[in-house]
Structures are given as structure tokens and as C-alpha cells.
Length: 128
Image 1 (cartoon, rainbow, N blue to C red):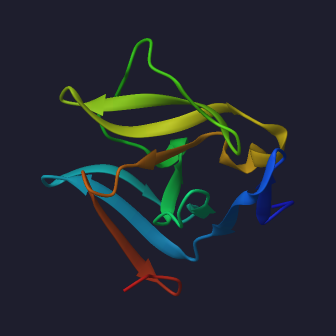
Image 2: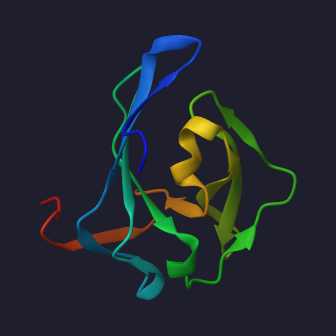
């Protein structure tokens, strides 16, 4: 990983820290496994507030029946343009398919809304 702390080029007070997770990560909902990986990334972002950490799972570890949301995109000045996924019609995850060059390590990863899924970490870096 080339850079751990990434700053918004237009606002130095807006930044994120990206770190590899040294634990196994499982994402599920109502007993259905949606993703599993030992290569997740933890992103801690500070902007208008200090945001809760978000885990980004490599696409290869996403096994759940996610459907892309057609026509929805949002923009982050740190990461790029996000696209979204649903599960049974409910928006549940997002990805940065073409991140900015300074956020390239997020390419090919999917993040899930922590309040809509169960996220479990086991191993050396597990958050309790």
C-alpha cells in the first residue's frame, strides 16, 4: 500500500487513513453470508466530523446476491464516484469503481452499511 493517510487536495482538514485489517472479516445479513475476506481495508475518515470506520472487502470475497443500483452515483473528493448495491431491494453497499489515483487502493473493494449488516472480525486485529 503506497499511502496510508490521504488528504483532500482542496481541503487539508478532510482526510482518511487506510489500513489493512489483520483479521478475518465476515459480513452477513439475517444469516446469509454476503462477504468474507482476510484482505479487508479499514478506512477512518475525518471531514465535517470524525466518521465511524468503514471496512472495504475485496470484490473476490463478496458472495452475496447483490444487485447494482441503476443510475445512482455520489461523489467524494477523497475517493471519487461511488456506485451502490442492493439486497432484496434495500441499498446495502457501495464501491468506488474508478477511484482517484490517490485512493487507488479502494479499487475493487465493496463497503457495507454497518447498520444494515452484521460485521464480524476475528483474529489479531479484531475490534471489540
